[in-house]
Every structure is written in structure tokens, then in C-alpha cells.
Amino acid sequence: MVTFLIRRFFQMGLVLLLSTIVVYLILSFVPGGPLDNLLQNTDPRTRPSQADIQRQMKAMGLDKPWYLQYVTWLAGDTWLDTIGLEEYAGTRKGIIRGDWGESYKLERNRPVLEVIGRRLPDTLRLMITATVVSLVFAIPLGIYSAVKQYSKLDYLLTSFSFLGVSLPSFWFGLMLIAATLAFQRNGLFYFPPGDVLAIRSYTVPGLGVVEAKSVTDRILHLVLPVTVLSVINLAGYSRFMRSSMLEVLKQDYVRTARAKGLRERVVVLKHAMRNALIPLITIFVGTIPNIFGGALITETIFNYKGLGFLYIQSLGQRDWPIVTAFLLINAILIVIANLIADILYTVADPRIRLD
Image (cartoon, rainbow, N blue to C red; front, side, top):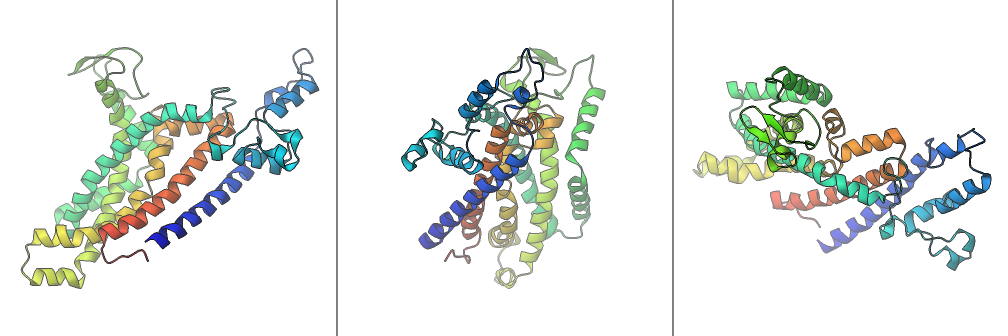
């Protein structure tokens, strides 16, 4: 186990280093930058002098060769004077030491981690709620559908799964918003069709006055986006659980357990379900980065200002420090999720050993 973890940590470090190179190179070739507005200004009365532009470029580290810009971005430039590059030394610490830069479009001069940190709680509430709701229903439905194969309920659940997997999230979200608008009563909504929180108190039929930023307000704003994400995830998770359970129920050790006279409930829940969870673990752990990143389309449709909404805004505004941080944090979470999946395999199936 120790040897496996050492090898995996080495692989994770190598993958993350390659990820930083790829992300930096890709975004370096994308047009747009922090000085675009200055460079494109043709008005002689307001256009800054070349000296001012050079001063701005030096402050942002853009006066360095491209490879030193990458090194500065990754490891900072406070140490460059120790290798004979005094003219390029500065105060940047680099992402390795927690300096992810500053936003230069959306929230000018604010640290990127501060911008992300303010949006993170709303995204975590949305994604964790949707994931928990999906798994709570998907696992028992998948098991029941496999045990009662070809029953009427199995056909019904299979049809629902195909429908849920096929639904585009943007279309489903728009339909829910349209339904909310259609079923409003006296201009009042049962569920708010957008935003994270209300800016003032409002009235909901059946609930009365809901105070802005209260717990009830947060729950009501989560209902529609959680519904979209839960239905789509539930459809996929239940199909994986059903397929895996059907395969496990055909194994010899399950037949042996039944031949010993064990009750069907014990055979299914104790012996078959643990091994059937392995494919679902792979799918679920793969969604861990999404819990951080949020649902890009769903958050945009519902104007839910979490990290997914922030990422779309950053792309539109070409705020590359935020985009870069978003991509790298997702890369970190992906490699961590793969390690967690390997460890969970041994928990679900004792026959698997990480040698």
C-alpha cells in the first residue's frame, strides 16, 4: 500500500506539472490580455505613453520572455536574482506558494483565490445537495430494477433513465423556469426561478413572507437547479447501478450464498451490492471536480452565481487568471479523485489489493 501511494503521488505530481504547462501555453496563445484596453486606445488625449505601458507590463511581469513568464506564474520571481536575472526579479510568489494572481477584468485587482472563495460556498451547497439526492434515490432504484428485471417497474425506471440521460440540462432548466412562470399565482412564485438569494423579502403562496437571505430563502432558490441536476444524475447513476447489479447477481459466489439458504435480502444487500458499487464509485468519484466547479450550464440558466457562472463570465471577459485557476484546481481535484477511487475499490471489494 505504501509503495502504491508513493508511486501514485509521484505520478500525480508529474501530471499536474504537465497540466500547468498545457494550460499556460493554451491561454498564452488566446487573444486578449490585461493591457488590451490600453493598447487599443487610439485617442491621443487619453492614450498612455509608451513609458506608462512599459511600467504596467513590468508590474504584471509581461516584460519577461515567455518561458520566464511561465516560471514566474508557477514559482514566482522573488528568487530570480539568485540566478543572475536581477532585472526580472519581483514580488510574485507563484501558484506553488499560493499566489494565483489577481483578476484584471471581473473584479479588478482582487486576488483570484478571494474571488473564487466567495463563490465557492454557493456552488458547494448546490452540487452536494444535488449529488446526495441523486445517490439516495439512484442506488435503491438501480438495485430494485436489477432484482426485478423485466418487471413493469423495471421498464418504467429504464424509460425514465433513458429520458433523463437524453434531456439537455439547458432545455430542462428553461422548461422548469417556464413552468414556474406559468404556475405563478397573483404574480407570486412558488419557487424563485433565478439567482442565489433574494435581495428583499418576498411572499410565496402557502409559505407567506420569506425573509431575504434566510434559510428558507436559500432552500427555495436551490429547488429548481437541484431538480435539474438530480434528475439528470439520477438517470445515469441508476442505469450504472442496475447494469452492475445484474452482472454481479450472475456470479458464482451469489449462487453459493443462495444455495446456503441465506435470505434474499442478505444476498442482495450484503454480498452483491458491495461489488456492484465499484462502477458507480468510478462514476461518482469522477464528479468530485464538478462539486467544486459547479454545473456551468445549469448555473448560467438559473443565474446562480456560483463557480460555474464565474467561469463562464471569466471566459467572456477574458479574465485569464480566474480561468487558469479554475482549470488547475479542477486538474488537482481530478488526480485526487482518481486516488480516492482506487482506495474505495478496496473498501467495496476486499478481493482488490493495491500491491
